[in-house]
Image (tube, rainbow, N blue to C red; front, side):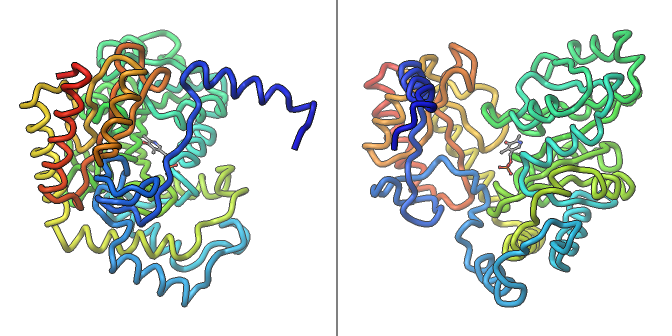
Length: 396
Ligand SMILES: *Cc1c(COP(=O)(O)O)cnc(C)c1O
């Protein structure tokens, strides 16, 4: 099909290819398993966010199927029309309890949760949104949709944050919201939420933490960053995703009852985009139940993480400042990172290469994510291949 009017798209594709920024996703031909069939090849899968190995868990699948039988396949409405099913209300209650907050509100994704919150809470040029420089794209877009002024602090740098909070602009602001990822998605490091909380409340700001990579991963029962730092009752807003450890799709904000109800009346994704299929809510209810009653899974996630990171470090790889199952393996060059990933794939291991502009120049890397589903044998196999290819490419 040819449209003269879309000639610009041909040029854009060419430019992306020239800049190594054209993306061709690999295709999963099996369930999202620790050893999966990807592009028709059986590989150790170190790429998904399936932290707790719930994506293909029999109990979770059964709950999801039961919900389809009871409530049907879809909701065919937004929440405020007739898309609120009892199972959505139940899940909101359970997520509030999980996060030890008064209430929670579901959104269609982690992405729209962030845009919804930023846009609904930061509504005037007199508001100030203060954000870590490595925050997720959805927080950046949320800032763009908000009417607030924006200030960016250096990654996890509390002096940089303090400087902003002490500025005249911050002191004059009508509302000041500090936003941070709980666990940063490219480096696997944890935000110093205890220090952020102290500074915020000293200067009259409130805090929103995005726990996409922290829920189901850090804290007791995987409750997230607030639990990790024992800050229950001190952080105003906790964002979570249903799309990573919870193996479904969606997001939520856990907060006070009034803020929840305010969002339920004004947040644009809540008002204008339909609610999740009931099977999604059932999936998350099942995962919450497993997290509560089976501590072994979280333990396995962390013992696997420890093993994998120790072995890579022993072999001489630079794995940055990771404190979580997200393991960056530094390469320092986009072409080389792509090559590393491709050669590993041929050897039966999939870890994604991440280049500029997703990460700064010089910080190009592979990113591996360990899950509770990997066996030590899977990880040993992967490490052997990392070393083999790493030597060939002079990385170790
Ligand atoms: C993945 C991610 C999101 C987006 O979540 P989805 O549910 O996939 O839309 C938001 N914030 C952070 C920090 C993430 O890593």
